[in-house]
Length: 218
Image 1 (cartoon, one colour):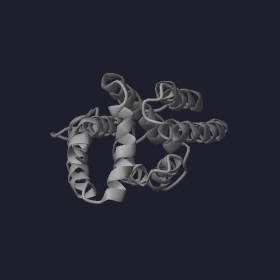
Image 2 (tube, rainbow, N blue to C red; image 1 turned 90 degrees about the vertical axis):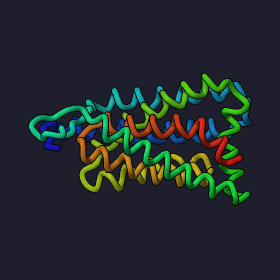
Image 3 (tube, rainbow, N blue to C red; image 1 turned 180 degrees about the horizontal axis):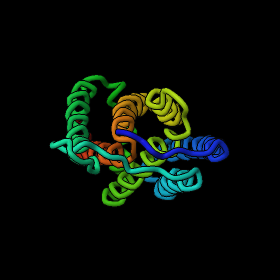
Image 4 (tube, one colour; image 1 turned 45 degrees about the horizontal axis):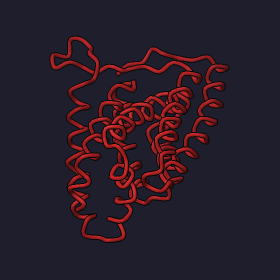
């Protein structure tokens, strides 16, 4: 989609500084929260702080845009909804098939179980809410503030930074998931010029995986 939003050089430099600081703090919080023992009440606090970090960093960095998509008639533009939902469901299907394979490999299955244990030993409705809020906050930051702070190859670099932030968890399966999901939502960001499409994809994927993965890996 055509873009008409530009920033001054001073606003761009400020965005980069804020994004860099937010990325470091967010990665640290992500690593600490997911390396807690399952059932630790600090998990709730840290994951809420994590979502707040992504959101506040985005607000301070500068404006983000929802983006647009072509309608079927191609005579006007509309907010991207149908395509992101379809892509999100496609991602769910691919990851579900992968989960069935992962379940046969004890080392990889253990990595998935380490993440799922935070839901098993906690209040599932609360974890679902945290998953929803963090998914939205991640997309607003990584495909909004951070993406806009890049001059070129935004899809590649935003995916790389998203994946590197997940390295703090020391969980191979989470890192792999971040790389694949990051590429998908990054491409959607490039196509639509905004964060709405990536947000929808991420929410459809993350909420589905929260409830499907425990069944698939067992």
